Amino acid sequence: MLVPDAKVALSTASVYPENTAAAFEIAGRLGYDGVEVMVWTDPVSQDIDALRRLSDYHGVPILAVHAPCLLITQRVWGTDPWTKLVRARAAAEKLGASAVVVHPPFRWQRQYARDFVQGIWRMADETGVRFAVENMYPWRYRDREVAAYAPDWDPTTEDYRHFTVDLSHVSTSRADALAMVERMGDRLAHVHLADGSGSAKDEHLIPGRGNQPCAELLERLARTGFDGHVVLEVNTRRSPGPVEREADLAEALAFTRLNLAAAPLGSKRR
Image (cartoon, rainbow, N blue to C red; front, side):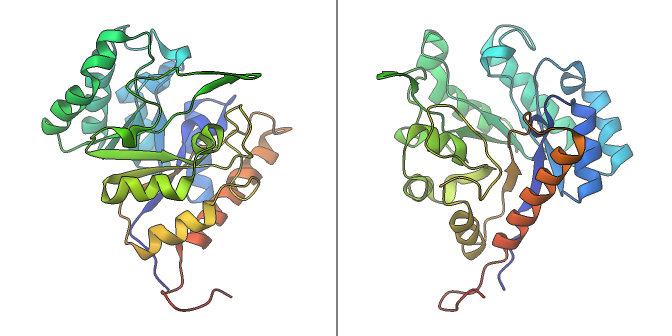
């Protein structure tokens, strides 16, 4: 069996509406290798000292920091997008995380979008932390499609040093996940694992519950010796309660670990 060095982490967003502290507790109890901190409106997610205490208490390393680049986090760590990335990098360095996940700019952030590609290269040159730019998707409403991100929702159209692939976003964009991963090549540094059914809504289903090639991607990562992180970024907000939420997160972890243990080329899985 080929088992890569990749660690399997839980995004703190995966426990919503529970908070960041709950994510550390759940990740530790279920046996995740670490967490990715989604920096959002929860004050703990913005507090480096509080995050360090949670990591130490639960014995759960912080493997990545997701910069605050969502619509709901436009005022987290200020309003300047570059300041947000500088603070995300500083948080990653102080917490021992090896990656910062960043979205392409919104199209209305015109100056930021114009400078984004070169600016990400400049920031990557200043640190050992990987700035992994994530694929997004067109926004759709009925028969209309809006290009909400610039330079593009698909980061492989630009020259970035590192990429994050998100399979739920691939599903929403109705793109080919494995073809996108092929374009990313050895610059794929980070994976957001979740499933989708092709809905215009960004679903973040538990892997195996949609139509995305989650298992195939994991087996491919194993065969290519992927050494980045695989982060479960799933939506459990419709879980009836904490017991069901934890069961879903345990299932997601088991699915990921099973499929990361890939059979050698030429053999058959049993």
